[in-house]
Amino acid sequence: MSEDGSPTKTISDFEAGLAKADANVASFAKDDRSLFFMMRGFLRSHPTTIPTLVLLVSVIAFGIIAPRFFTPLALSTVLQQVTVTGIIAIAQTLIILTAGIDLSVGAILVVTSLIMGNLAVNMGVPLPFAVLIGMFFGALMGWLNGMLVAVIKLPPFIVTLGTLSIFTALKLWYSGSESVRNADIVEKAPGLLWFGEAFRFGGAKLTYGSISLVVVALLVWYLLNRTAWGRHVHAIGDDPDAARLSGIKTRRTLISVYVLAGAICGFAGWVAIGRVGSVSPISFETVNLGSITAVVIGGTSLFGGRASIMGSVLGALIVGVFNTGLSLAGVDDYWQLFAAGTLVIIAVALDQWLRRASQ
Image (cartoon, rainbow, N blue to C red; front, side, top):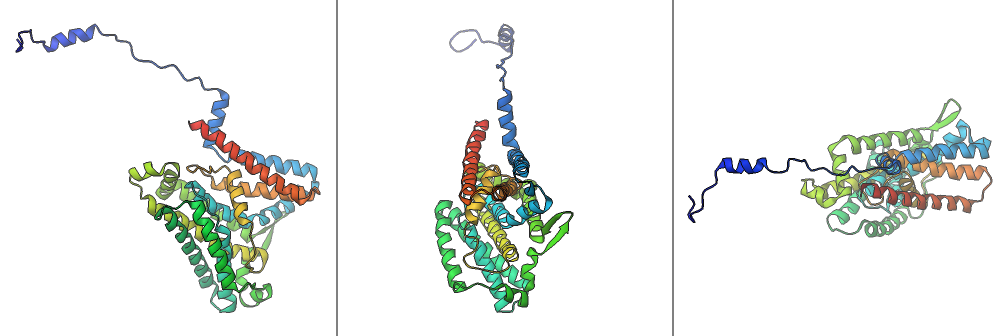
């Protein structure tokens, strides 16, 4: 008996009550996913699908419009033209993956190329040391951006807009607004031009710079997709607060992303010297917008958490194909800019559409 006089229930009493309970298992209505919904999910999981299709269709279309375009030589020329932009786009992809943006990548490229050219040509520093010093300063400028973003907590757009002006002023001061001439490079440091050297492969004419674009893309793809560091970068871009709570050192990882991007820009500075044959403080002024265009067209989300290194390379190639194809077809330059702008708007709209696949 209980204290209030009521009989005490035993375990058997409870078991008897359970026997009378409803034994039906809870069930949920099956989500009827349409083919359209599944296609959107597939495109989100495989961001390189659309840029690959766009590249193939554009190559075929321009090959029909301008038969000269559909030759190995013309296609390899496109690859040469987008080599520097493609490498910078890889660096930009790393930043955008973390939901940031870097407007200073072009200035970093020029500053590092000026450092390499001045050290190797004017000061007689051996080429390997000149290149390493240049890349070191590229990483240092990336570190400055990373510190301002990760430690001071400033918006990446504002930070890199400010450092763009700072690095632009530095390159003009350091160079004295003077270029390093091709003749001087050939005489004193011909190794700076190595990435501009070409070799025949079938009917195509490839440069070592084009090969370096593929190598850099593969290395960065491996880092992002096959290492713990890459998984941490993806996590930060997707949800920085959740990444921090899961034990990821978000500040250190974010700084390392900007440092690596700066080093890649430094390497692109060496490739750029071989591409144009000289070093000028006013060269590659449009590479910032070109890299962002390539990244967006390539399927990387501007909101972070989803990126495609190979897609960025394909995006650079798409822009190059459109520019070259329209030029061979006799289309005026302003229509080439119109086409590039249209591609960016379509790519951003597509990104918004794909984002809703996970919501």
